[in-house]
Length: 543
Image 1 (cartoon, one colour):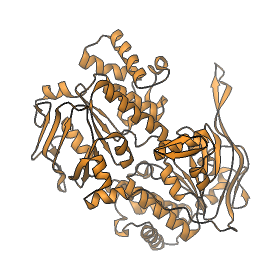
Image 2 (cartoon, rainbow, N blue to C red; image 1 turned 90 degrees about the horizontal axis):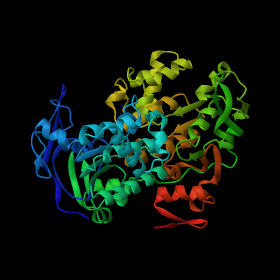
Image 3 (spheres, helix red, strand yellow; image 1 turned 180 degrees about the vertical axis):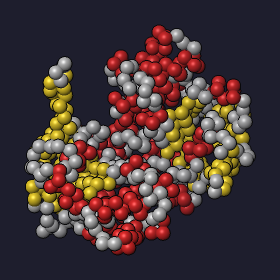
Image 4 (cartoon, rainbow, N blue to C red; image 1 turned 120 degrees about the vertical axis):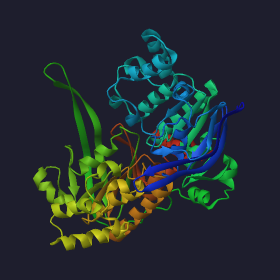
């Protein structure tokens, strides 16, 4: 329940001073947030959501970022231009933040215990014994298992969902009045996402805190918020009750967001389509070594006896939670990691080939990774990135020939060829993913592993990338292995679906069968989490 005004943002402006001039990132936005209430800030990347939220705690880099105008009143205190002492007493104490990517937000050199203890030492002045007891309590509160053992763990030893729970525990350490949740579930599996959202709702009810929830996922807004502000190009274009905005949006941009879910269906595969990639009883086991002599005592069965077939022009979707073996399966098929079991590419057995023998086939077997910013070299221009594969495989006799091929593929993926001499940081996330796709497609492959290619993108950009991939597939008869935890995207592009858990296939079959009448309880749980439906008996019922 709300209980009086907690936050008032009035005519807030944020400018960034850059060598190229002043960028107006936030343009006279206004909104209120009551105690105990959840307000969602919604919009695509670059709309100003996070900049607005960071302004509340005055965390933007000064003097590059400035407030030409506007006011932020938190519980009667003006935050814009507030003394450092005032800000220190509020930051992490009365207002806390959960960031999108906990792996980059947590210190990789400190244990879980040390990171949560630091908050308690600074704000609560607890001693070491008291802080340890409070940390155990917090980790239990956020639903982390084996809390005693987790105290000494480092961030890289935890899964994405576990790291996010640690971040939430840190944020709740001082029982804040306001929790700013900046895309806290974007990188998580659908089942983990559902758990984190439920956790936040329960904690809000327990502590009576207000939540400012920042997201580009409108499905989450329906579940979490009472009111919503829609942001576009630094301005709030529409705000009101969630039901009102979703059922009768008035602004064209809001309508565009609501219509941006990936849609459509996979292309029909020709009955006589050739089999491009095939694997039988494929296994990837990683040894667990122990003792002084480092003897193998057991194995991590990352991929444990999987059989699949991908035909020309077909997309096989692979779904499952993090750690289920999806990416390992893709890497094994491409012969990028060792595996056991026959792998056939275009009728040729490749599982026994040496690395040097596989190299000529690399042109026809390509991969597009999840994070285009991490997979594109920041020191190379877009032209150089795409040309690299052409040089390796000796395609194009002259620089002019290769440049013509680069221009053609950029046009094919919907990018302006004139921008080919720019660098990755000068492009948006969706544009960078188009570059990554262009880099693979310029080699005219026959089989492409798409490893979470849309999970880091806004919904509208996701829909564009799915449409692009379908178009390229129809044009070139490409075979795709589409790895994702986003079932809405998988449904829009896949002809066949494999559901994985702990390295094994839980369920496998035609996309329509898997999505409309899943047979296994695990598959039904995935569907329920993804589509906000309830698993009942052998089927699914919308709620």
